[in-house]
Image 1 (cartoon, rainbow, N blue to C red):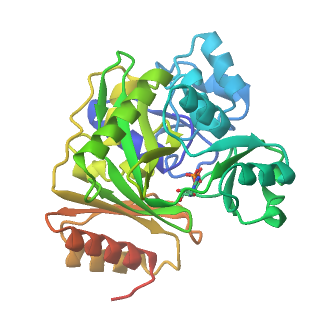
Image 2 (cartoon, rainbow, N blue to C red):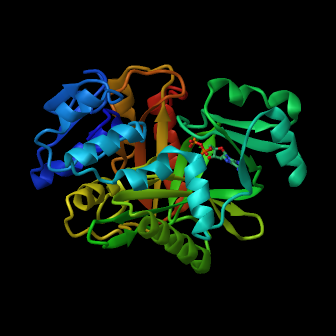
Length: 372
Ligand code: ADP
């Protein structure tokens, strides 16, 4: 796996029971996955020679992020390296402009959008629809709300162009909530769909995921799953695909973005589904039969732990484990930086309010924002 973040750490964990030999290309030995994987190459994924040397002896190469340059992926494929998902699919997770164009031609509903050339063009885009505000996004390199701007007038429109990356303008969707439809597809074309989840963002960062999405009609949930399966098949995705969706106030679904790897909206599956997204990603990239995606509890809630003022971790564990013996804690071993995702907790049960409260309490306690 290329990339040493928490997704690689948890994918590695899921491969252990299958006896899979897992090799990692990581930026530094301190990265989340590099701390736990024994076969680690430290190197830069932007360097083709490093990638070539790393891929030697791998049956299949997969990714914990979408930042490996497409030309390097093409070169590796030309060398005969098996890359899953392949570059033609991955392009749609790397570049929001390419993704929007492809989904539009496939007839998948998306927010109104187009590539804009400069601030004046943003004003024209606004005037073509309902005016400001509009959302501007750099087509590449964004994550956790970085690379996304809500622009309220011409005067704020200059900033996104400074990075020198093409800028995509989108209508500002007045959504009721955000959902994610997660599916996994294998090279054989087998696919499984997880229950559609609700994802709650705070300051552009995922905070809580509720599985299944409360109150979602069977019709919309089926539509979301079908949409995700269709995207996976049309784009030839292999592995886990997260389709982030907006549910509009008038009951429509619009695609926000795609991720072709395990995704934060699927972390609940570690403790709430028969087969986790990580286990199914491993199975898919190895072209093994996929595992059952069904839930194990009425409700499962994933709450992210963000970096804050860490108290004594041992004390926090004593408190959280004693208070809630059913709590599932997943910490990533990452250096604490304010606002950074350093772990998550999963809670499950029959009473959603209780399941949410237990997750909130544990996440806040582990972050250090509450002490009792
Ligand atoms: P990232 O690459 O950071 O995940 P996203 O495209 O998912 O970027 O945008 C981050 C957040 O910004 C979304 O989760 C959503 O809350 C908000 N957002 C993005 N696009 C729109 C839009 N067109 N209308 C309204 N809100 C949006």
